[in-house]
Image 1 (cartoon, rainbow, N blue to C red):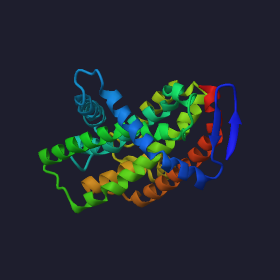
Image 2: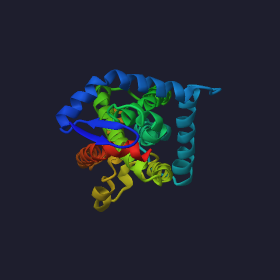
Image 3: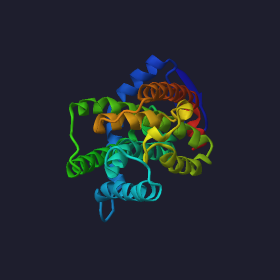
Image 4: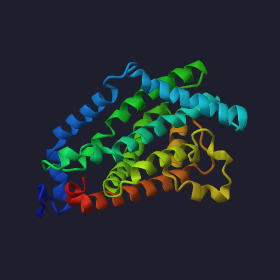
Length: 276
């Protein structure tokens, strides 16, 4: 164990990754408590409450349907609203989770400066409200599929694995950005811009079939490309010719982000009480 002293607090942090994992597991009750707290806070004192979870993706879908289908006239094998909403399913989880997670340390500054607990709990628990977004969007998507007479196949059984991939990416990026955000406060302005641009740079409103083959490797470095196409394959049965390559690149990039995030967070955690 290493001990770091400053005028505010004595912070004890485990040195090895195995030891850190054991300490993190011992705080699992705190993780669940903070996750439930974040869910309650998100919908507290709102007139429409949980309806906002449904309104946001529906409005986003309508806007993208107008822009990409009616104005840009993008080609689509499946009904365009279903095509878009299938991509919005992982994207909404990712965008909401990263945004909340990246601000979690700053939002809990008073807690960080008073007691010790594994700080990584905060960005992980902050992803909890995104679960509500995901499941509400999934229900809306199923309704759309029934409306457009789309088949629900056995590929849906693979959906938990696809969800695990988007969860790992979201948590990893949230952990990394939360640590950067507490040290460089400019990130609080950069992150919303990053998410907004990411929506249009990712294949949410269009199919990756329109991307030229010589650009697909570079384009797939955005891990959301492979994840969105994985969701479309599960839900719509659509798979373009570069599907396997996109998934492999997405797995590699997600693993890289996870490793970098874990190492950077553990390295800088001991200084958080000084920076908040």
